[in-house]
Length: 86
Image (cartoon, rainbow, N blue to C red):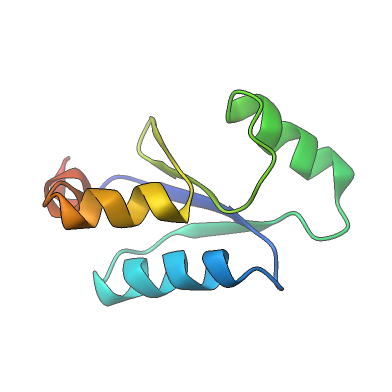
């Protein structure tokens, strides 16, 4: 399973929903909180091509985007193969 990184905020319902889906899939992930950390949020924004909202999710080297994009992958049947990639 590829490394999964998710930038989150503790009060974000979309972050909770994204983590819930990943947990349901049994996918471990590195969670990086941006709460009160301008430097970390700036790093996330830079890596995400200017996107400032959370969550921002990477599966391996692929920037998935946010919660909506993660659920779109699931609905299209593309999330499981992505998670299974070596």
